[in-house]
Length: 78
Length: 163
Image 1: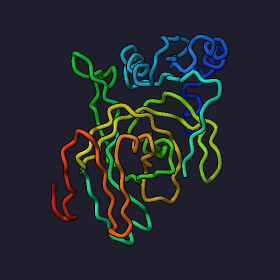
Image 2: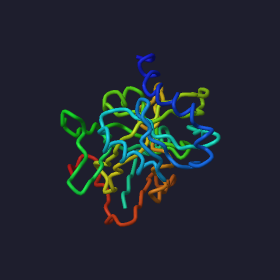
Image 3: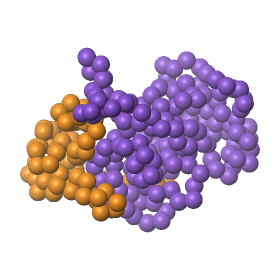
Image 4: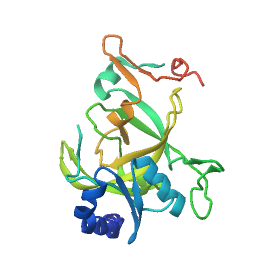
C-alpha cells in the first residue's frame, strides 16, 4: 500500500519539479493544476484551482494542486 | 455558539474532543453539484472522533480514515511532528461537517495524512479550521465553546438527550 500511495501524483510532482524554476518567475504564489503530464492552468487560490481541476477531471480522481513557492512550507503538528 | 461541558477528567486527559463527518469536497455550480465521479456515486460522509488541536498548523486525518472515506490526493507536504519529520505527507481534499454542532459545513478543505498512534481520535482539527471560529477553553468550568459568525446560537444538550 505504501508503494501505491507514493506512486500517487509521482508523475505530476516530476512535472512540477521540472518547471518550478521557470514558473517561479511569472507565477510565484499562484496554484498550478497538473494531471499526468497535462498542465491545466494557474490560479490565485487553492479553491479556484481545485474547482477548475474537478470541473475538468471530476472529484474522484487525483490531480496535483501545487502552490508555486521557492521554499515549500513545513507544517507543524504537536 | 456551541458549548460543550465535558467530564472534568476527560477534558484534562484528552482535550476538547468532538465528532466530525468527513466526505468528498462539495463543489457547487450553477447546475447543482459537480458529480462525485464518472459513475455518479453517492456522496457519503463518515463520522470520526476528532480533537481540537491548537498545535496543529493544518487539519490532519489518519491514513486509515483517508482510505475509508476515499479522498483524492492533491499534493504532498513536509510535516514536522513529535515523532520526527515526514517529507512526503500526502495532502487530500475533503469536506467536513459537524453533526452535533450548529457550525457551518466546510465544503473544501485540505487535510494532511498523519499517523496518530494510540490516540482515541482519527482527526486533529488544526488552526486552518480554528481560523473560522472563536474557540474558548474554560478549564475551571471544564467546558469549551465555539462561536462562529452568521450561525445562530445553539447549546449542546446534556448527554443522553437525542437531538
